[in-house]
Length: 231
Image (cartoon, rainbow, N blue to C red; front, side, top):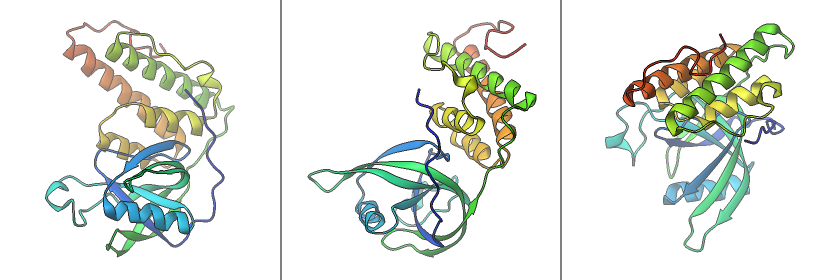
């Protein structure tokens, strides 16, 4: 697993294009690959490339399905990313990669044709001191919870976690949140936590709950400490 530092954050413009999707929550300091095929979002990519290379990702609120080709409601907090790779395919579709820059509050929507644009405000994350014993414990707990869920889901030991506890908190918690397959409402709640220590602890709790559900679904009894949590 690559522990990437967050990209240098450019000053965000007042208005950015918004790419809303179901079931996807984007975190700062992570890399998001996307396949872009709808005409309106192809246009968005072209316009972003010609401008400041920024696109904000947003999660649809429940009930979006009937209005998908219009402008269904989205959660007010998303994440703005910078285009770091754009591959245009022969038929006009794109494969792109976004690097998460900042959490973004959608203050108001300015336009919705051919795609949505929003007036935004960057929402910083609070990063506690790395040497704080509470941070050290929380990071170890999160890594163990992630490893435990991976083990129950796949039947194999999690790999790629070497040196994870020495990774800065903002990289660790956001990367693992992006990597693990949690329900979108849980991911949205994690994104909404301003303090990264709170997010780290909440993510570990969510992973343990998912581990127990996966264990019960497989008919496996709970083994104390078996989910990798710190005892």
